[in-house]
Image (tube, rainbow, N blue to C red; front, side):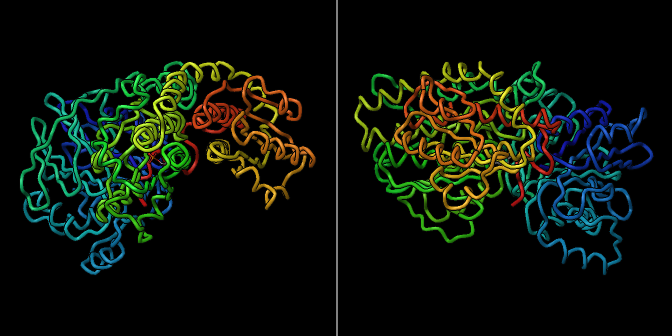
Length: 608
Ligand code: G6P
């Protein structure tokens, strides 16, 4: 989704800003722009399209100055055209502003400002902020920004510059992530650490309701009442190589292939072999507190929601605790029945998804205990929850989530183990799960070593218009995830269904043109799914099945099979999803799609 980079220092800002927003490309966007304070005034350049289009538009001569802003926009209000791209400026052309989020009372403010004589150039909600700041500009820039923000309802992360104050960069946050990157004689403002990593590892994460006044040699962070706030400097662990493609054609493929390591990192230090349990000190809950919980609600969006479904199955089957899954966007507006005996778990790769963050706030307000299963360290959700566990899967850049998903399932298995051992699992059962978890990284590597086989199958299905993904039990959510991967990046319409439900609708679609992907490892529902495959074959459907090594029954009836090693039922999703990730990837590549930045999608959805 939208990306912000601001710079104040001694170097030329424009090249740094362009490189910075390029690092944020992965978040998804449809237009880009930059503003630089030159000696002679403000220069603003912006275009619909990609950063490469902005670079072409700028040509050889970049605007010159050491203070500036850049932005990638993902359209919410107003189509993605040049005028709606950020930065936006005031009537006088001295203030430039970039914004992530949505100003909810923009319409009313626009009307009010228009009546006061302000002329608008775009259809965006953001532009009202530039005019509002101009309207209140009566002393310093920070005062005007603070006054303007008090009039605003909605979510924002903003950065503002003005020709009147060439030594100041202002940043403010309310509901949309923002951080300061601290350098020597220079500072950055960014919506994502990836934009500043090349220049500094020292960052300060801003919190909601804070304004930062950033200069070349220092910065001050205040609340909206202008009271100074003491902030922690965080050192980023990710290195630059981790946010680069490292020889792979796409980030998505790199991240798929990284899964043996990312899962190892998610497991690191958590498995207690002898006790047959998991150590999760980050959840900040003692045994008695865990035992006092009588219900778990898992909340998330997108791929993380699919991981949550697997968590629900695990928690109920193995930890014998009632669990349910809620789309975060529904939970937050649904008057949910949670109380202090409910454990609400937010699952989020980015830790910034607006709906998931709001859901966790709602849960807290109702007295629930909250946990986060999050990848990005220091992200908003990670800071909001009472405790949790990080995936440590490393940065995920490809818009289609892959290694975060397997990490989330593994983290949920750890949590299930921890709760399950207190409630229902014997030490022997616990040890079996520990053993299966420890074996996963090598098994994942084994599945991925057969990527060429998946590539060949993808070739045969690449012209499909529709696809059906079917699974049962733990692999029903995998069917949903496989279908999501395919539609996200290859634009083939795909649906995931519980295999038995096929008879209640999707079976009508099956013909010899329709690929039907079965996720059918040898688990408790194996024989049931064999019958479902027979039903599809009886209607001339083309079947690709993900099966356990040594499976003869399905191998005989399916058109194509991809095998995975044996594991316990609850962990089969970690292995069975891998061929589906690869299948979507190779299909999309063959169809010439932009795998890492699929159309209209955003990596981190910071608006509701
Ligand atoms: C977007 C991404 C998905 C992701 C979802 C939830 O839609 O494109 O890949 O699953 O957001 O994101 P989160 O960061 O909360 O896991």
